[in-house]
Picture 1 (tube, one colour):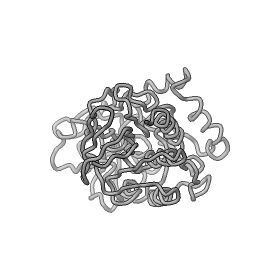
Picture 2: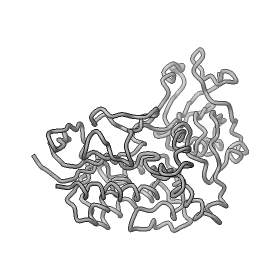
Picture 3: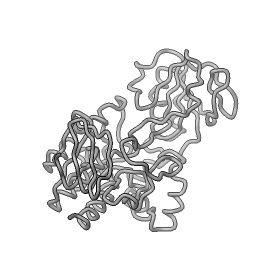
Length: 350
């Protein structure tokens, strides 16, 4: 079988950042990705999606985001940036290759892929946290006449039939989708809004803000550990828009949804009986199905030390939320984690 020193699984921002740092160290590696083209995951998101952080904080190591420091790249612009990043640094990406399973064989890992079996001394799982859409179990109890979709399947207002729309989840994705739909539909949104980062923060104090979330809020500091303890229980902060903006557009804000009553969504304030469509903006979970059993936290994130899996030497993660800092799951923060993992691989390379 083909043996490669290091195999990186996933050619998103995390995997490409790892590849960049491995290439700088002139270490043999390849990047496997299930998509047909680099950036396809981003191209599949809703039509009007733009990054939630400006270009200044949305670049990978060694190549600036072309939208400029203050610009917010569209999802297609960022997909193109990832593709150009891979080509710029001549990263060895193999597209259309899915890893189905991985097992430990002596001092190596054996990977069962859709193009054959491969082995490696080091494997980096770089699929990130947003691999599998998450919907609460009680969603199956909704009336079959209510259309349901996860935010990852939403495209544009024209794709949503007439009738009231309930967006479940008041984080950034839910708020932006609700705001867009408000022009064509009656929209309700449920959940506890996350904190809003005012535009002025990025415009006038972006450097100081990034310094706090990237350097202060880490697992090495008491404030960082405090934030990390509850980080997975709420969505990302609202950027570019506030819940006041959403409500001003005519969207009705309701308390969080707690279940289903007689086939209809139920909040702590009562049942919503007029909904024709429910959009679940309820986040994601990492895909760990292809990996050996791992210890995970309460939201399904593998428990590691800065991405290093202690019980399986040679297995690493990059791109998980709060892997090291609050920015670990963000484009602008993943490079530091990637560099750390590349250093670990270099230290223990045969």
